[in-house]
Amino acid sequence: MSGTTMRAVVLRGWDDLAVEEVPRPEPGPGEVLLRVGACGICGTDLKMVSGGFEKRGWPPSLPFVMGHEWAGEVVELGPGLEGIDLAPGDRVAAENHAGCGVCPNCKAGRYNLCYQAGQPGHRLYGHTAQGALAEYAVRPARLLYRLPPEVSDEAGALVNQGALTVHAVRRTGLDPGSTVAVFGPGLLGLMTAQVARASGASRVIVVGRGVRLELARELGAETVDYEQGDPVEAIRELTGGRGVDRVYECAGSPEVVVQAIGATRRGGRVALLGLSGGKTVALSPDALTIDEIDLMGIRSSPNAYPAMIALIASGAVRTEPLLTHVYPLEQIGEAFGAFARREAIRPILKP
Ligand SMILES: [Zn+2]
Ligand SMILES: [Zn+2]
Image (cartoon, rainbow, N blue to C red; front, side):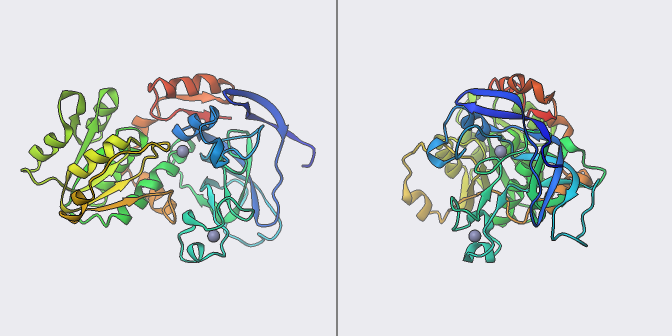
């Protein structure tokens, strides 16, 4: 297959995206060539396009092919994969964190925190290595998870963000019967609300505004509109003054972190899933110490893809209300526009 090309969305310079013919990647040892079925774009992509992560080395150089939330079909197995449980035609979702496999964190299964990040041997596909906004992509076989027929390619493109919320729910040790608040009803928040419910939360309260908050209500959550008053007070009122057991910050806003802590009961836990782009906020350590509140960061989705795929396949997590904007690859500009204007929860490109 050498010498063949494919169409890809290429970031040529800051705020300069174009669909171009580029060389089709070839699978090396342990790698798989995949046909991309559906690929979403997220807030990180939006910031990457305008150079917001240049200092982090995302992307490491230009031109670059982004795209890290996707699903596709196996086309060809590279050398060394004879006999593995994957074959051409299998549909899969692809994880984007490939840890070095050697450092203590990788060995402990925490490959999202690989010590080799930024070094050769560690790859973050779509950020430091070529992404999937293209007709084809190559990935190590160990990053692939088979999709059952109940999970479409479009739904498969939501597994990346969904798996992050599985990791958050696990890390916060959500007990059956717990009360939960979710700040920010974007894809992350709407997935968190559903995964928390599926994991045994008795009440899920979503804080936000507008049509996204409406969507949270349609998906079964109680809602608090922060434009109608102080959301912390509203949550305390809804919980008899106590606050909730677990809070998930999915807005990526430093001010919301303060609210999230304020909405947590004594002895509760707060998980931060959103990135705030380097912004800071003043926190009172006493607010954590006196009430023994655990504040934890959540990064990526180690070992969480199979659980998320099962939750979607079973119907415990619904994806069809979130898949409102689907485009051919050529309409990448329209897709980014619909996301930037907050019209689409998750624009999906189909190469
Ligand atoms: Zn993303
Ligand atoms: Zn590592």
